[in-house]
Figure (cartoon, helix red, strand yellow):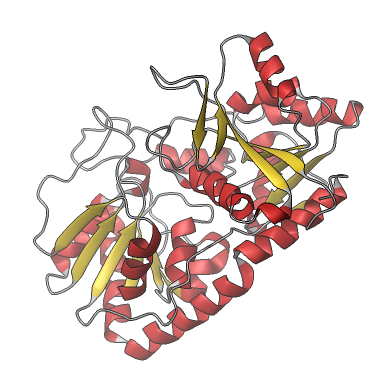
Length: 387
């Protein structure tokens, strides 16, 4: 137990709560940190979620999510300042950084901040994402790929230094440090490793008798899910399972037109049901045009499921699966490489088993609630917040 209780504000634009926001990776991170502290009150950390967005129509400016209060953005800057100061936060944790967070960081100019960098996108990454197109869309710009300028964080860091407010940068993936300066306009003097609190406990993974391949993620254009459905057509004797749902609809979104008979779409799945599906799979396929460190990679590996992907963040896919090579645009040019990679993993039982076991062991030793808490306590101590 810590020496005192602290009030932690977690700032994000989503919270993995479909009734409140979208269901992306930033929201997953906010939820997992919240669970770490609410599941063990003896840790001495009280959590409040702080949304960079306004509440949905009819929703109060303050509500609850994952068992803790959630504060939404108010159009009145004065109201934001009053609301933030009334919470008496000892520490702010931002889930990456978005310009919508700025008003909160300015409202508490002396409160220490940890910026948990999860998906920094320098101009080169945005240029690659801009090539994305949906097959058959006549060149229309897909939803969800508009550039976000996060360089206002540099100004916050500068005046924080003048006010002697401590700001620390952390990331679950050390290879992302090289992207921070071009993304945020500031080069942190040091970057702390803050792992992901992966909570899955699959035990001994029991694989399906029939080859089973899974897709875990949003069914939005940036993930290029159409490639997964195309793979299914090329492997009619393999079961393809889609876990996830779309954020977007209407112009610029994507939805399957003709679903192959060997594809089963189950929507959003969580908890024990999710673990069981992941543990039964032979391969996890990722077809995104961009990834930083996908949580789905870690969850799949924890369940001894090797990876097949068109992105290789930090060499993770090459280490625990098959990297099929990057491909811009629709990604359709990569289908022969994806097919060859999937054929290799399905055919080679020994390779698949070894990659899965090694990946599961690595995740357990690197990304867990215990590892997160140890690192979090250390970075808190470095900025004068002790608990």
